Image 1 (cartoon, rainbow, N blue to C red):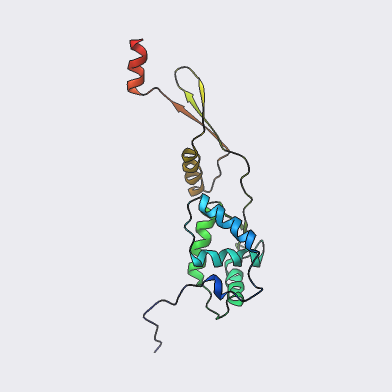
Image 2 (cartoon, rainbow, N blue to C red):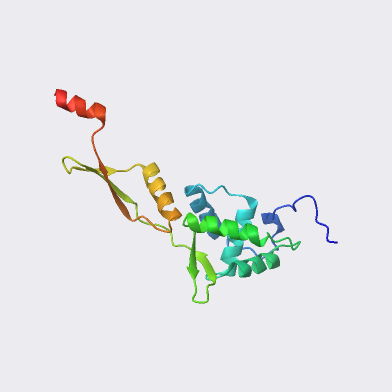
Length: 174
């Protein structure tokens, strides 16, 4: 009968990557910064995974990534395929990686291009049509997250607003 260890094996760490097998440190650091910008908490597993994604190259599958990580890790303790897939899904959801589906239904991953343009958000007052620019980064982050949950990317947004109850009575009093 098979027996399994009662504890999980330790997660891979950067110091377990064989010399010369990791990706360019500055490229990984740029990806880490992008992850922090979209509120992905960086763990050792995710850092190793970013090295593996860059080392495997564009268009890699989850299995290819697992094989790459197995070759990269000095002690042969690559993350499980389930952990890899969960983190790949998170990276895709937050716009760090792009997932392309081939005609034979393989999921291929590559680094998503960086968003260079600022998101244009405009509030449009319902009664007057007056446009007010919204420069709040929290609103842009919220819209990007909601769009990513549905597999979309926001390029611009116009939000129709009405004066708040207190502001409307203040304006009528004048």
